Length: 273
Image (tube, rainbow, N blue to C red; front, side):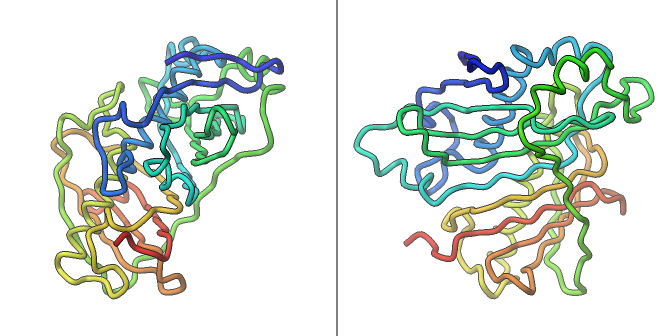
């Protein structure tokens, strides 16, 4: 990945030649949702080392992902139809600085036209390596980068309650889902949600979703994380259709009764033919 900074020093741009460099595709001919999220996450960490000094910030602590919002434009799904595969770039900025938390915003856009295909906000909490409790951001880092914050992209996702009737799916965390800190990668929870939904479709659990989930176009993902899991942990993932919006599936993941994550995925109304 190649990173460049704009003149203000507030935006970093990471050029990627094509989404077809990614290994995993869905029926739309594009990267799967979790691969796309992984690409955005890698760009954030790579660029963060370059223009936000993440390498020094994380010398004695690690980041726990707290919440993620990803909005996908309808135009994103038309990329495979283009005669010439567009060169894409990911533009990143610091969106929020709190006491122990920070957020970064990322746009996946066309390098030539500037069209934004995906907008992502990821909020993380710095955690002490020993106590695993929130650790305040170093004062030197806050002082240096507070002027670089663009907008106010603080991301807080409210908890929701399960209805009485849900579809339940069980999965075991594979070793390949470990992240750099030997926790389950936050991106994996998106895949567990999709797997749960596909299992729900197969078992006739939903009234509005009757096809494989890869045949529906994702519009928006809101996911919040509450506790850690590790390789070989067994998760119970509950899912159900939102009562107010027929195009939303909700997910509640737990381990041994402890809440791990909640996820809400909204789809575009039309399904792929």
